Length: 335
Image 1 (spheres, rainbow, N blue to C red):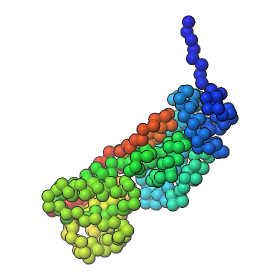
Image 2 (tube, one colour; image 1 turned 30 degrees about the vertical axis):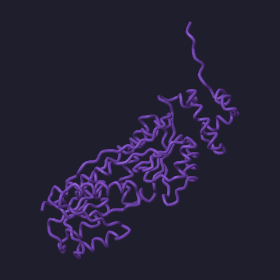
Image 3 (cartoon, helix red, strand yellow; image 1 turned 90 degrees about the vertical axis):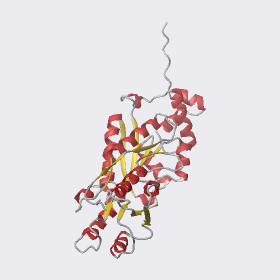
């Protein structure tokens, strides 16, 4: 005789945990007013029992909800092309997986854990994507305690407390620096911005390429030491002894192009420069900037896939890197 196994329901979860059915219902819906501890216990028990809500069973593979917080400053600045591509990738992958994705712009300078909790609750989300926003101790501890998955998008967590998706910053920087070395340059500047872990990986890639090349000398200048215009003035005034520069992003690199290659430039015609990101402005610059292309839509797609896995119960923290490629451009010259 065929025995059909009874499908678990909210009453089963409530009985296992010794709480009311209404508490289970509110915890599963991520409603405000439920403690993080109770929410975590209910959601874990639901996964253990294989519980699926009627709403989640209505769509193929289950209907998941997620909220993506995108920094307002980056979305409305020179980085808008970068984050637009990421958001497009997020939306495409969410549609493919049946994930209800709520994209919200936030002021990154005032992002707090309370703000993130509020955004998640308002969206009724089972997890959050943080674009260009790095993790901090309080956030990581809450994510684990409340069992609410967080995925950093275009970010990384050196402490491996939350998952992340980013371009291959180390290898991209190594590739950019190696391109200059292959052109014969042995005195190379790296202009960097070190406050984010992702950008520090670019510095490491630069240092590694320099370190494995006999006779190569690397000079590192940070944005907190010299602003872009100030550094350009130093270069034109001959205050640095190098013949090429790897710049941490395209915006800073393009800001320097006119001064470096203009008719009044005192630099030799072989002075070379490589950027990073391949933003739209890199292709519009004259000369066309040589740079590292980042597949921004692939970052967005990977982030949604990873968050969906975590919502389904995957516990392992993962750090996904998206490969990058060299765009030759017109700003690398042999010496």
